[in-house]
Image (spheres, rainbow, N blue to C red):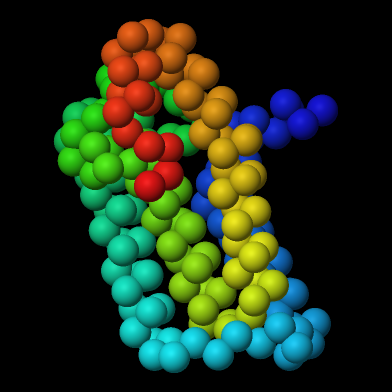
Length: 155
């Protein structure tokens, strides 16, 4: 049954679901799990900047190399993208979404919300990234396996 979730829910939708869940947890009166964050606005700003860098750089690199950006159809990829930001992480757009979730958790100042944001990584790895990797390995073989050996999945 869980296999049916693979590559079905677009990552942006997963991000929205987790954002809403984090807010819901915060709204239920989690004052006992309040987290004071010194220089909160600075941390939020940095996380948003990092998110923007990874997200925009990833999309631009895909467009530059004329391959698909559609995360629900990795079989449409025309090449292994291993340049630019993809030399740092295999999943820059997912790193970008996670940085935004962290920024949201810092804004909410909620320990439980920040812990829930870690489930985003678990979900994305299981239902998005690993299925993508299987398809890309089938399609590109050794080229993709070599890339996987050199570059980390997240950071």
